[in-house]
Length: 473
Image 1: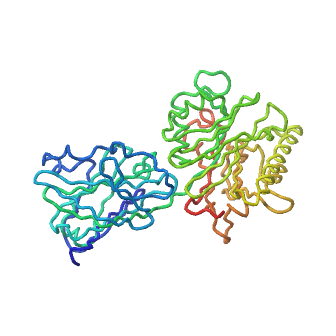
Image 2: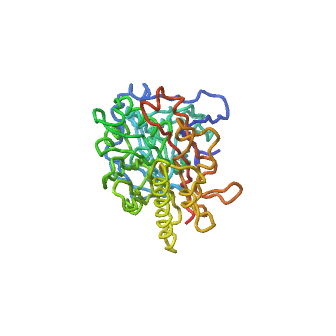
Image 3: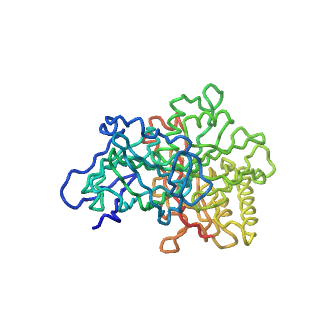
């Protein structure tokens, strides 16, 4: 293989990092959490750029990922990351100085995460040059280094990469940027000819969670939760379920919601609190991934009763998946009056769907979720599911395993997610749409958290996963 066109492939497996096998026998480079001692010992350690790169971690307006070469705080070259970003950049290290370049892979917030980054080195690269690579680690606010790459690694066209032990949340900033640092050691000359980025789609996780009287400590009525309880509720949302978007029922007030959000960095919420009911609705979403395009209250779901809750509607986009979502919390109890009101509310949801589908050029991906206080096959849920005799909305909770209960105390499921049957749902053996078949789930939180029902909620969340790479409408 000639000097021109050496291919240096750096696999950045972010969730489970693999190891590429090198041709030949040599000692591979090593991973370190900070600058290698040999870089610092040259006296040039203070010449490394700070992390995060000052002024560079800002949200890009482009949804399509871009690879950008950065000088100072200016992007001097950029290409769509789905193509090869072709340019020639020469890094030269002096006698006691390093040369470096930062690559910003931006516009990742909505679509996915970098799975692999390839650098093709040009003919000006010295075969004996020592090169270090570093990936930005936002969780620990540092560069995670790999290097130096030795001559055999350069000439073989592959690099053996031990685990960086980084997750997508570590590598991609809340503004949707990932950073790669290339360092030429003192005396080295490195020509970077091309950069290629391969993206890994990360499905969106959407669901519903009735937290049961979410209120700040010291308020009367309902639970008086401790700070540890709020922390564990946040851990359920962000870690156990990994929600990108989740509807929250029974929020007492904005202050209570804000208390929960203090334990959820990288999340924000849409909240409504009109009418005379004391339990309100909120939608908590991951700001680095979810675009809320519009939000409004659907008052018709109250059926004229100020003590009942309206619907909370958002128009949102995650990657290329755009959709309309209505969250509801329907009338509780099973006396004849309550069941009649719940059926009326379901009829209003059906009317709202009629209006949405009546627009021939409008959105076709719809999600209706929340605490519906009723079971699969009940008259209210059938009212939502059907248009005439045809299924218009498919209830994903039909796919739950036996024993998966959203209300485990009563061994039942009253919290549901329904999606457009002909546009979003992926039927077994049928067309593959946004919903990932079989992904709906309920985690057994009552078995994970001591005294879960007493301390946290009498409901368990329901979650489903959706593809975000391609939208079908």
